[in-house]
Image (cartoon, rainbow, N blue to C red; front, side, top):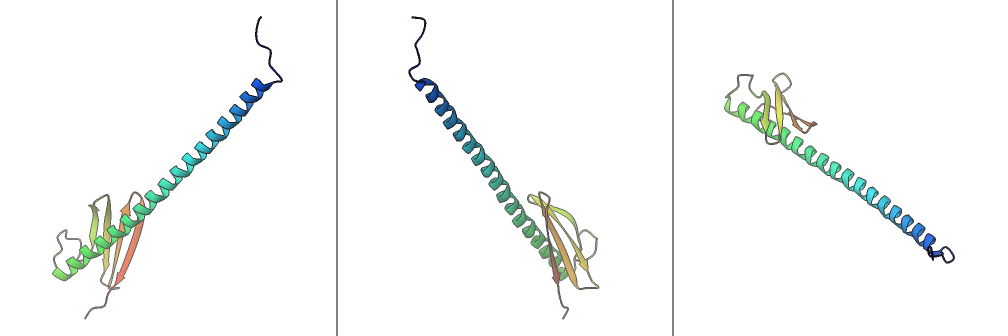
Amino acid sequence: MPGKILQNGKNGATLIIFLIVVTVLSSLGAVLMVFTHNRMMLCQLEIDKVKAITLAEAGVSQSIHELKTSVDVDSDGLGTIKKRKFGDGYFYVTHSVKNNGIRSTGVSNDVKRTIYVKYALN
């Protein structure tokens, strides 16, 4: 006997059903991987936003400290701070005597957040 004779095409139908199931499961797996990757990227972006605003707040604190103590360590003007690395990012601050304002920018992984503080003199 040279080979088995297919009975009503059952073996061929089983193979086709198996291939369809494998294709569907592979597609679902690929979609799940893309969804997970996008979610991770969004989470990292949110973390960078929080870090950037925290860095900007640190810049405001440093500027206020310079103004209160009247000590300008880096000789760039009271309340003004050049780019300073801090943790995973950096911040820089400009102080405007004319407008009584402090503008602080924090940067983390190319995400920038800026805080503007206006104050009144007593």
